[in-house]
Structure formats: structure tokens, C-alpha cells
Length: 416
Image 1 (cartoon, rainbow, N blue to C red):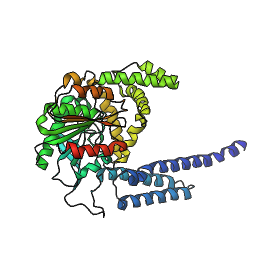
Image 2 (cartoon, rainbow, N blue to C red):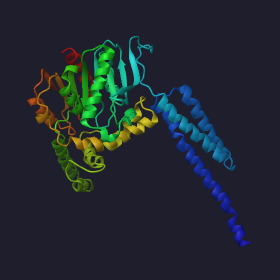
Image 3 (tube, one colour):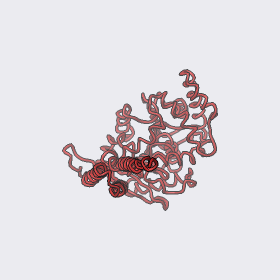
Image 4 (cartoon, rainbow, N blue to C red):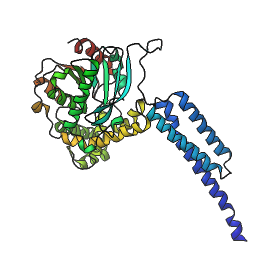
């Protein structure tokens, strides 16, 4: 009798545990639906019914928690809605329309998210501008390697009145994550694909030459591109200009160590010393680079890369939920493959002459792409016209430098 009385409560405990797990699973599966209005282009007509149905299923599960048949049905329903949300985010991804002050679609404007074929692979671009007769500005992406071109749209929106701004998700990142096998990501591949995109834009908009912009890693690609095909470009514009990756990284590593030692952060400093100075080789080199790049971002007063990288793509409605994850995967996978190929990069020796006008925007506090190296390169560079524009910020462009960037682009670069 005592054995039977002890055993009776167990089914109730198991039912309570099963119900708790089911409710927790249902709330976790609610996340893709909740993200739709916050981070995607899915319209309310689609996400409101999904969210309402999800909440009804969860309420039903909690209210009827003692009925075993309810748990699998409710969880299955929430699972199905999560799958539908992910698919909808991909299918309905879009770049926001360009509208007038009254909210009407602006006649003659363009705001498109498009898949294009470049050298046999399908890749993605956005095209945005108030007048398609304006000159074309090609944004090569946010750096990396592996940073797509869509997440920094807000920095270029003031230029849409003066340029047709085209942003590119290079192969291996964002919506172009699976465009080519990662082992094919080489200098030749990037230059070839960027050249194909440039020629596509020239033909589409009837322009002999276009403008080119790169930042950090894509500033390297920009130099390569204007070296190979100066006849295709009005000018090359960069921020966070990379010059000599190995020297740059050694300087950054030493600066990070000094900063950590001054702070008394012995654990982080010891980790950097165990890693040793760059360049790094082997598998998954990105982690060793991030160890000190995070410290450099702290010095510049910017968020750590390990926090910034996953968050940035979630702000772009051009990315569906899968694309947002692939953007982070692309940065990791592309960096591991491409960055070691840059070990011997030195534009002082390899690109002392460029046959296009050049504009370098350099942050005075930039210690990711060392301002001193960019200034040195600028000083010896031969070009038809060149300007070095100092910014008060750190690496690349941000909201504090946007007005200065736009002013130079409109009144000096475009009119040159």
C-alpha cells in the first residue's frame, strides 16, 4: 500500500513538467512572429493574424493545460506559424519606398531590392534614388570581409536626392550568402563580380562611368577595382581606408594590449598574449582577431564587434530572418577564408598610382584602420585629384560624420 501511495503523484508531476515545457516551447516559437513587425518588411496584413493566432494558441494551451491532447496540437500550431513567419520574411523582404513629404510614392524614384546574375552566380543589390537620371554611386558593402551593403542604408539616404545609390551584398554575405562556394572567394572573384555589376549598372542607367564607395575591407576591393578598370569610374571614395593589413593589425594588437594593461585587465591581456600578434593563420582565425578588435572598438567608444555583428542585420528590412542569420554567418565564414589572403597587402608598394580621383574620409580616432597609415598612403599616392577629409569619429561613417560626408559628396565629389 505504501508503494502505491508514493507512486500516485508522479503522473501529475510529469504532466506539470510536460505542460511547462510545452508553454516554454510555444513562447520560444513565438519569437519569429514577434520579429516580423520589428525587423522585417512583412506588412501588418500578414503578421497581425499570425500573432493573434499564436497568442490564442498559447492561451488555449495554458487554459487547457490538464488535457494532454491540447499540448501537441497547440505546439504544432505555433511551430507551423513560426515556419510561415520565416518564409514570409524571406519572400516579402523589401527596401522601403521613397516617398514625398506627404507620404506619396515619389514619381521618377527607384527603391528596389533585386537579384542579379554576376558571372553565373545570383547575388543581391538594392537600388535607391529620387531620380534615376542622377549619377550612380555603388556602395561595395560595410566591410568585413563578409559585411553586406544593406544594413547601412540610413547613412546613404541623404544622398538619394543626388545619386542613385546601389548597395551590394557581395558573394558570401547576407542575401548573397550562398552565391559561390567560400573557397572561390578570392581577389579575382570579387573584382570580377564587382566589374560585372558595374557594367550592368552602366548599361541599365545609360552612364559611361559611375562613382564607387568602399569602407574597411571594401575599401581594399575598391582600390583593386579602380586599379583594374579606371575607365569605369568617375571617382573612388572610401572611409576607414585599409592600406597594409599586417602592419595595421600589429599596431592595433599592441595598442589593445597597452589599453588592457592600463586598465589592469590582466585576464584579457593574457588572452591576447597567448594568441600572439597577428597575422593569424589556420582554422577560425576570426575569433583571435575579434579578441583585440573588440578592445579597439572600446578605445574608439564604439560597441564591441561581437555585439555589433549579430545586431546590425536585424535592423535591415531587406533581410528576411534567414538572411539576418546568414549575414552573421557570412562575416565569420568570409573572414576566415578571405582575410588571410590579405597578409601581404601593402598599397604603398602595390597601388602607388591610381588613375581616378580619390577621396579618403579618415576618422581622427580610427584605430581599426589606422589613421596614420591612411595619411601616409595619401601623402605618397599619385592620382588625377585627391583629397583627405578628416572626420571627428572613429572607424568608417556614423551619424556624427554623416552631414560632413554628404556635404563633401554633393558639393565636391559630384561636381568635380
